[in-house]
Figure 1 (spheres, rainbow, N blue to C red):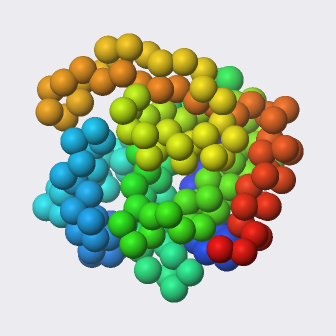
Figure 2: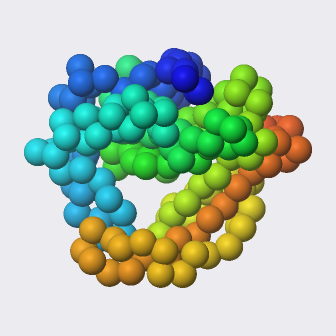
Length: 195
């Protein structure tokens, strides 16, 4: 299996392999901000969280995803993230299906989670590229991806259907292996600067 489940530890956040034992914490986290009500993304409602955990673990068993629960510095579950669209032959992954409790948003947590995932992808998994995708109209997500140092590859127009049935244009970003040292320095600087 590539990549294999792993725990990643930082100062502001830690990533642990997704497990059903995280269900109650994930339900509490998704209630913080009623995140499932956002029209431009697909975040599970509290009553759908167990199904979402099982879905992600099923995709992980098939080798197309590696799912994580996100914990804050106090070791509270505050969200989920994944390596998805795993392409073991070409050593490429997408970081996505990410959501955080509202109280964890706009904190160092997201920057550190992405740095942990990128470092593991480039330094341990020897990835050639890491991709990010989001709804073209999800400006908050697009700004966060751009702050990481990812470059816009393009927009896939009428790419998929959203949960409300509307057509979604998908903005595709990536960081390639040769860019990682500069991106890593940038993310380290962001995490060290005073808030």
